[in-house]
View (cartoon, rainbow, N blue to C red):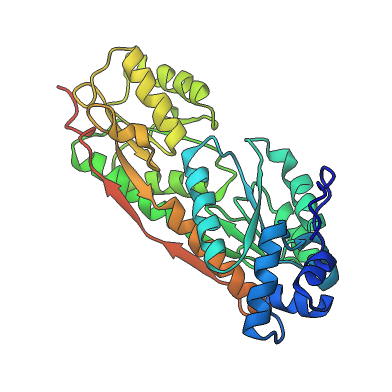
Length: 342
């Protein structure tokens, strides 16, 4: 092999690997890919040469030849939110375990970019997509062009697309019931987009619990806020500044919980002596404050791993019946719930 410096950005080729190892190009290809026979000593020699000269398989070229790839596309709503970061990590870990690579797109809360991002993934020839969808348009587009999709966390196409979710309605019902059991009757709900299945089902679960106990339903205590902590704090300040403020707040995602906690702190309300707070989803800060924040935890990493397995099964069996995988949740009691003040 020549010691001549390689020009910048010029990658070693399979032809150079074959020449240096003293084998044909096809033998070098078989030795590196593991597809087809290559004698063990030849395979080891070829791989040693490839490592020495810095050769890596051009997965783009391979996918062009095979018209698909070992890559999977992942579309998440906002990696700044720890839930989506852990979800993506779970997908990535499971993908590596199955010899897959991940092409990750972070929408950073910009929902209108979803279809454009999906088109980019399709252009990269991913073998399938896992997404936290924001509309039914994504499943319609990918179904039309034959790219498998797994909806995770929320869903829009129950009839035609596999999904990995939790039972949000039952989880919210149980969480609200815990506040009722503590003696609360004026329970506020801070909720995100009810056009999404997550928000809609959590609101339904909250109402189920109140109606089940014949507790009054005050529509003014149901306040919608988005996925921004400042917006959530402003909404919570409005609730907690009222003369007839609620004695408890159920904040239905981790961002809303953060906003509620910050609002209570700003108003110098003691938790749980003056107001009880429960959340949905966990975040590291919730166990670092005092008292800790009681919350409904869903294992985001496990959701991601299950979605990756579901995608691989769908790729393997494209005609199998559509299915929904429901993952468990658990309530973490950290001391932010008490009886309402006198």
